Amino acid sequence: MRPIVVKLAPIENPNKEQSAILEELGEDKAEPGMLYIIDEAKQAIIWPAFLFLRANYGATGRVTEHNAVPSFATNRKDAYNLREWLGFLAALKRDWQKADHDLLLAYTNYQVGRISQHSGKARDPNTVSIKLGTVKAFYSYTNAVRLTAVTWDAKSLAARYSNNRRRRTAEDEKIRPFGTDEVPKMRAALGPLPTELAPESLRSTRDRLLLEVGLLTGMRGEEICYLRTSAISKLVPDMTRPNATQPVRIQITKGRIHRPVGFPNRLIVELKNYIDGERTRSVKKLKAGGSKDHGYVFVNFDNASRPGSQLKTNTIHRDFACLMRRLNMTESVQRMKKGVPVIVQQTTHSFHDTRHTFAVRYYVGLRKQLDRNPASLNYAEPWELVQIALGHADWETTRKHYLRHVGEYEAEIAERVHEYLGEL
Image 1: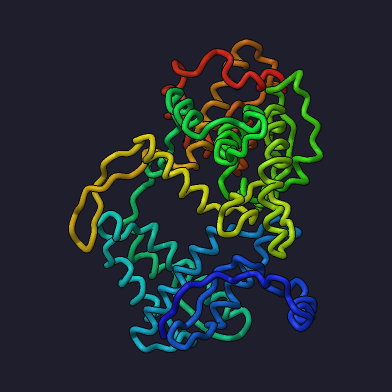
Image 2 (image 1 turned 30 degrees about the vertical axis):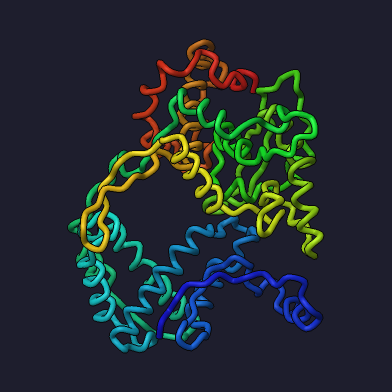
């Protein structure tokens, strides 16, 4: 067996037979984009793994009653972790249904002894815990549906790696807010906003707008990709108060917990212009190819291989990395390549740092507002308001993540940073 991870593709323009099957499956059908595992040698689906991933991630595009649908990133993590486990079993010629504690212990020892391809050091205990967690979750599922009766001693498995577990530090979180000198460089490189375009110009403003959405709302890349045109179209921006915000409730979030996100009026205007202009041109080509408008705000360029289709998260991160390299915003780091240490260039920022920048600047703005008028925030803790804006479960966690960066920005951020905070 050669397990590999593949992505479930959508059925474009299904025929009558396919439509009937999809209708019969109803909510039991798996959502396009779900990652699952096949045996490459036999070109066959590995059904136990598929059913496990379907049960957890097949409804990724829909929000359940409890709003607890995991993210695509978690689907990817579990799919690749499960592929590694199945590959381990294949190498030992062991049946997945006959796993036991000893086999799980052997797999744990195998993971503990592996060398990380990134650091060239022994695999981090947290990584081992995550990989083993996927395997245990898989067997918890197969036990529940009576495909297996596998048991294990969780404490003895954890003892193999927990003693070497180190405490995570602030550096591990890789929180790197942009400096105030870096943001203007990025804006200049990405070009004008939709309202700044010359008449009849066909220049793309998508990537510049993505940057602004990240900086002004703190949304994650995946959340931006699932922002719907209907959510923006119904807003009526008040340009007499350009920095005042209007709430937009988003559903596709990390952990799928609904939360409101504040969109400044000036950003709403730009989004509406993009939707009516560049997006409309791209989606027109999508429809010409026989596909329907998916309803998401950000789309592929009209000269892309699939013009007008929904923008993907990896495209945002890939294009942003290209921007960083273009602006020479890189640093030299040591990596292991085939067991040999080599020096490579990596970018100093990722798109996710727009979220970190929003969080730090939001806090500084709130605190300045609080200093001027203690009653202006209804005596709320500023970190608690940042936590709500970011969608974190606990404000103490938010404070620990970002506190060390606040001092770095105090001197840089102007007195009126995020003026819209005073207009909420």
